[in-house]
Each structure stands twice: as C-alpha cells, then as structure tokens.
Amino acid sequence: MTDLLIRGGIVIDGTGASGIRADVAITAGRITDVGDAAGRRATRMIDARDRVVAPGFIDIHSHSDNSVFVNDAFESALHMGVTLVVCGNCGGSSAPVSGLAAEELDRSLAVLDARRTWTTFAQYADACDGARPAINLTSFVGHGTLRKCVMGGAARAPSREELATMRALLARAMDEGAIGLASGLIYPPSAYGTTDELAALCAVVQERGGLYASHIRNEGDRLLEAVEENLEIGRRSHVRVQLSHHKASGPKNWGRVKESTANIEAARDAGVDVQADQYPYTASSTGLAVTIPNWAHEGGRLAMCERLKDPAVRARIRDEYVETGRNWDRIVIARARQRPEWSGHTVAELAREAGKDPLEWSCDALVEHDGDVAIVHHSMNEDDVRYVMAKPYVAIGSDSSANAPYGPLSFGKPHPRSYGTFPRVLGRYARDERVLTLEDAVRKMTSLTARHLRLADRGEIRIGAWADLVVFDPLRVSDTATYDDPHRYPDGIEHVVVNGGIALDAAATAPERHGRFLRHGRDLGGA
Image (cartoon, rainbow, N blue to C red; front, side):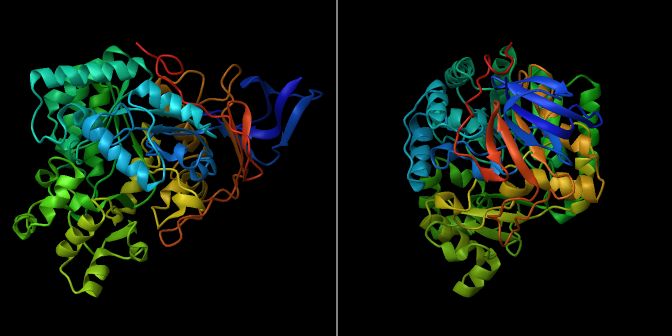
C-alpha cells in the first residue's frame, strides 16, 4: 500500500516544464509514481484539486544555522514551503569552531538560551539531527569562521602555515559533510581575506566537488570589481561559484545590475560555472556594525566595542568609507535585545529622540549590545529586483534565519523575507506581475539550486526522487509579512512533505519531524 497519495493536482515538476494534472504516490520517503493513481490505496490521501504540487523549495541562502536548537519546526521557513535550508552563508558557520569562533558562537547561542555541544563539523551535523528538525538542512563552512579558528580576528593575510591549517580544517569539514565554502567579504574577519587566499581555499572545495558561495566585497560603488573578484576565484580554482543575494545597493548604483549580470553571463559563456541568487525585496538586513569600518573590527566584536568607547576612534571613523553607507533615515532597527522599543524605528529617529548624532548613537548602541544589533536597510530599487529575477541562472534565497510568531524567535521586527520570500515570488512576481512564469519561478526555487549543489534526487518531481513536496493554491498564494508586522505566515501554502512525511498539514505545523542534516558526499554529490 502507498504511504501517501496526493490526488488531482497540477504537477509542476521543477524542471521548468509546463504543469500537468497527475497524482503523486509516495512510499518509504520516495516518489513511486507520477500519473493516474485511480484505484490505488493509500494510508493517507491529500486532495490537491485546483492546487499546484511542486518540489519542496530549497533556500540556497539561509542563516538558520542555530534555529533548530531553538525551534525545531523552522516555522517561518516551513510555512513558506521550504524543505531544505542551506546554512553557513556570508562567511559565518556554526562549525567547525574553536578559539574566537567558539567564543563568539557561544555568546550568540546564550542569547537564545541554547548551548553548543560540538566542535567539529561532524558533531554539529549530528547535533542538528539530534534536535529532530521538521525540514532538511545542510551547511557551508564559513570563511570568517575558518579565520577565527586559526587566526582569531587578525586583520592580515595568513602565513603559509596558517593557510595550510585552514585548508586542512576545510578539507576535514567537507569530508564530514560540509557542502563547500562561503565567504562574507564585507564582514571581518572574512573581509580581511585576499583573492589569493580564497582561491587557495576554493581549490580544496573544487577537489571535493563542493560549491563556493560569496557575499561579495561590495554591492554598491564597487559592485563590478567585487563581482569580478569572485569570477576570478572561479577561474583560478575551477570551483563552482554562487553569488549571493545579487543586487546594487544605494541610489547612485541603481541600474548597474545590467552591467554586473552582463559580466556574469560573459563568464558563464567562457566556462565559469557561476550562478546567483536573490530575495524579492528592496531592503536588505544585516548588523548595525556594518556602519563601522573594517579595521575597527580587528579581534572580534568585543574588541570592536572596546575601541568604540574611545572618542578618538569615533572621530577617526566619522568620515571613513563603509560599503553599505550611512543613510541613517533608511536604516531601521530590527532587533536590539536590551532595547526592544527600538524595533521598527530608524537610526535617524532614535538619535534625534536621544539628542545625539546618529554615528554617536550607533556606537553607543553597539557598545551596549556587545556589537549585536540587527537592522533592515532600505537601499535597493524595484526595477533592479525585477531585472535580476528574470535572469534564468538566478535562484531564490531568503537570506534570513527561520523565525516564529511565538517563543524566542518572535522577538523584534526582522525582515519580512523570513516569512515571505517564496510565496512573494509565486504570487506577486509570477502570478500578478508576470515577471516570470509560475513554472520558471518553481524551477528557480528547486532544480536550479539542486543541480548547482549536486543534490542527489531532490529538486524535481519524478519517480525515485525523495518526496520533498509543497502543495499550494496558485490563485491565493501570497506573502502577508510586512516590515511593520513581519511575524505573519503566508497565504496559500497548504501542505509540505519532507522525506515522505507530512510536515505542514492544511497550513498547520504537524507534530512529527521528518527532516535531517544532508551531508556532502552522502546526500550531495562529491568529487
């Protein structure tokens, strides 16, 4: 007997092909039939008439590394139809950790009343499995994390011995299941890394068949040279490249995505295996510490905060260039643990109320919070979002951690992308505005990412594939989360199936947990 039968839906298989009306049968976690299942008996049946049945969405750019230890349901991701989150992005991962990397991770976990039980990547993967996640997860190794393990927060190039140690640590992590390397080249200490250093590390990734993802060094005034740096890393090491959350930041740079994507396309034509990803919003989200120049971050967050107590340091940094700029009226506080009342207000507003200069206010806020204040930054252009979205090699990723409308993850006003990314593309951009077709939107959320990850038997609806699936109403699917009210589930996502088990049932989180940590070399293709 079939375990689960999804009847009468329009199957959009993830390849970009047109949808077809078909039944999908699932047994022992795998898809066993796609077609007419008339007369077939099943333990559980889902009526999918007038609904789309698609592969589960793969979030190529997630920061949910520690979410499982706080909320094993991954609520905001699950309710978007996500069945796999790819963690360890922007240069920071939760494993492997030692030295400064372990110290800073422990402080972050303590804020969530969680505790680290691992050092190695294998131990982290086992800890994730032990937490019994509702959906699947996997992870890069963060370039900044490697540096913290080996070099602390040093603002210099590694010695030959330090580079060899980082290469060995990366190799071991990949042998234990990491999918590759991710850099965050605006965030120290990843920002202190050189092109040569990254190419040498990516050679290790390429040897093991992994992927290199990068939050590039500049998404504003120096966008083109930052894109070129990472294309060059791909050329030198022959590694597959993922350019994270592609955009042009700041009004004077709007429209430059036409040039940056042209450069990406030229590299693809010349043989560089490069893709990009995007979230469908005109605001980014990061930490308030990006308004502080990189040199002041040397030694880690606490060392930065000690420097910021010095009036001479504040005077020095006042007119220094920072990649994100300091448009204080466009920078909104999302989360500040000691000051929940700040959430939703701009730095300009808060500084004015406090009778302070915005930079002085920001330095005081960082010192008070040990450098950890989250922001939403309104810096992009809607025409750019649409232009990038239409590119066939651009996948969809949330660039967020999983949140929940209850418990510790309900705090503050995080970016609405953690609840709305995937349904927003399906509803607003595919159905309503026709920036892309529904079939292509699904492809960008599924097989496009799965193939770049070399993810075995996922990302498509076909016989033999793992049954990671989402059932949604194409007429109703939409995001409801806003900047002012972000903790809101989307409409129209009705059922989510993970490894053959129901994780979301009639838009409600199911009690059973069917996810697991997917390991490179076992669940994802290796060398």
